[in-house]
Length: 173
Image 1 (tube, rainbow, N blue to C red):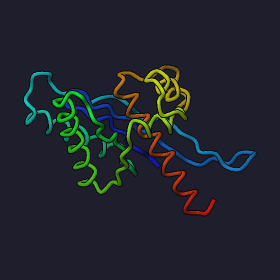
Image 2 (image 1 turned 90 degrees about the vertical axis):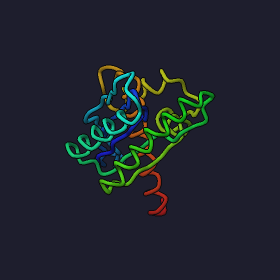
Image 3 (image 1 turned 90 degrees about the horizontal axis):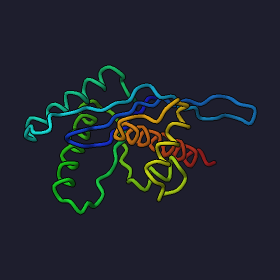
């Protein structure tokens, strides 16, 4: 299963594609994660929002067309003291939701606390701790850059772990 994680933003939208699969091991089965691709979609700093949003949508649709993810995951909007930033992130989230809906791809949404808990095991983990665990879980030789891409990979990992947990609960174990 391929999951496309998105860290929403109108200037920089981080993305990360992670493949998950179950592999047999001596103690049963283990979920294996593999990083496929990561990066960011950028828009011109001084472009108006009505120009930026179609650029982001087009970039997302190109990623979806190329990698054909089975699921998408997105960070939920959390309360931000800066209302302009919160509104901007909200617009970017809308673009991601629209791209998922138009593509027929299921979308999971997670709070920053849920992402940290799923990736590090501690909901108050620092950004550096999350990035280090992303590197470790995906067997990468370096921490992904930009930060938005590392966050997007963490969001994809959160979705994969959440789905695996839900499947275990549904199966009764």
